[in-house]
Image 1: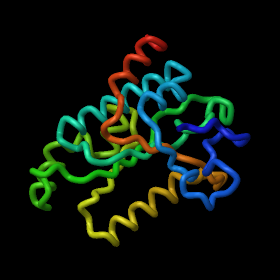
Image 2: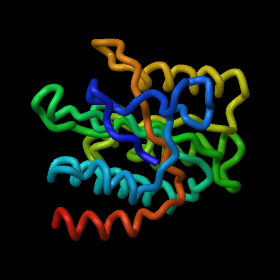
Image 3: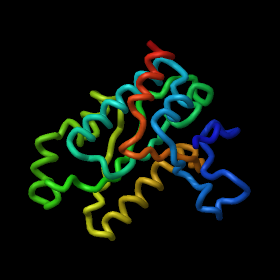
Length: 188
């Protein structure tokens, strides 16, 4: 479910009467098709979504299927109305469990090095239009909690105004093929 932008032009940080109900808190669970239906409102946004879906496919092809991604940034705002511009990318944090054949630290380090184009934020921004970061669920619990806290704090607020805003959560295995078909129909 993707709530509409609020009066501030952002996804609300919660839906319902109060943020005390965890079911109404951001990040909001959604599918790739819902993201496309709600946010592919221009050719620029459609291009960003094609890159995002491509990044997701490459990660799944490497066995990163157990997890989900938070989507945030100006892509999840009505930035066109707020600042008169299109978003330049989508901010993405991938929370994942390492593939079974890459579960020890040495194998994981080699795996990341061999696929650095998917794990380096500078490269993912250029190649996929995704400002992409990763949280390894195989990390020690205190480290993982620190990472979740950091990313939620960073992406849960606008950097300049400090306005509290919402994010989206898309499972790694979703309806990406349907989302691509929708994009092809609406933004060929």
